[in-house]
Every structure is written in C-alpha cells, then in structure tokens.
Image 1: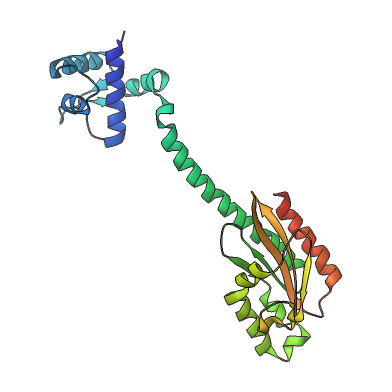
Image 2 (image 1 turned 30 degrees about the horizontal axis):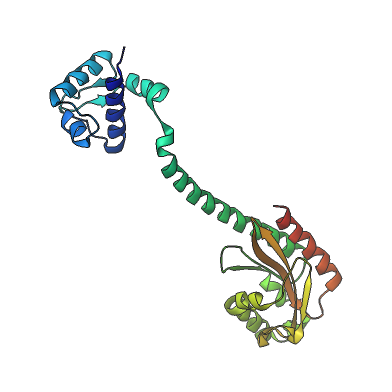
Length: 237
C-alpha cells in the first residue's frame, strides 16, 4: 500500500516526465523543493515505487520513468485537473474565439452565396470582429444593360467596392430594417449609378451588414424580400 509521500513522489515523477520526456532522478526531485527530506530518503522511496511496479529505471539512466501501471494509478487517484484549469481555460477560450470567428465568416459567406443565386446583382456582407467585406456577383454588373455599353463604369464600381466600400458601410445608417441608398445618397462617386439595399444582423452581440448593390433600375421589391430572408438566416444563427 502506497503511503502519502510515495503518492506525492509518484505524482511528481509522472508530471515531470510528462513535461520533459526525460527520466526523473532524485536530484531533480530535491531541487524542485517539494520534499523536505534527504536524497537517501527519496532514493529509498523510488526503490519502493519500483517494487510496486509504478516506475522503472531505463538501462541508460539513473532516473526513473512511469510505467503503464503508474499512469493508471495516477489518473485514477492522484491527478488533479483543477491545478491546470486556469491554463486550460485560457487556451480553450482563445481557441473557442478563433473557432467562432471562423464559423461567423463561414455563415456570412453561405448567406451571401445563397443571396447571389437569387438576385442578378452584387451582394455583400461585412463580417463582425473584422474590417472585411465579402462580395459575390461582380460578373452580374457586366451583364446589366447599363454597363454592357460602358464596361469601364462597371470596372470603376468594382474597384470602388474593393478599395473603399468598408468605409462607406461604416458611414451609412444601418439597422435591422432594409434601408435604401439610391444614386447620390451614398458617398462614392463611382457608385452613383447604383442603388444599395442594406440591413443589419448580429452574431454573438457583434453587428454586421448584408446587402445588395445594383443599377438603379433593379427590382426593389424582389431584392428587398430576398435580402430580408438572407439576413434572417444570419439573425437566427
């Protein structure tokens, strides 16, 4: 039967071996300062643990390593996960935030992909937590009669969206209703041949915007319904 000091010693050997992957000797145990006994006492206790079959001595080292039986005993009786809870929680929270950010981006992209299949215009969405705007459907601009005869105008719109549109969105009044910015109601000169429909959604308390941009001749009623439905997917998440 293992006494309290032997149990503490087994725990110390296992946790140091987990950390270092090197056999653990009595000198290291004493240097750690957790045992106020002599080196001879530690060595005697190590021999006792070896006799119990919970540690063993590799041929090439004076130190000891845990056996499978030692690990089994450790996890059943002596391991204390709570001593590592703070470090685990810090790591988990960081990874969880990365996970949710990635999921937020995927959800936004899926919503505008669906919207892009419904409307022959450019669709866009800003991503919470990031100064990033996704766009789909640029090719639709070049199919509209307004731009078939003036492809340079369509190119100017595409360039303006890629370079400046995140700033435009920050300056527009956006809420959870569909808002309309038609012609020169928005601030980008290159886009004043267009109309913008935009609404707000929130993911885990962080707000983003989703919308449609197309020629002023767009089907406002259809696009309003489509945008409302796509935004609803994000609001339900």
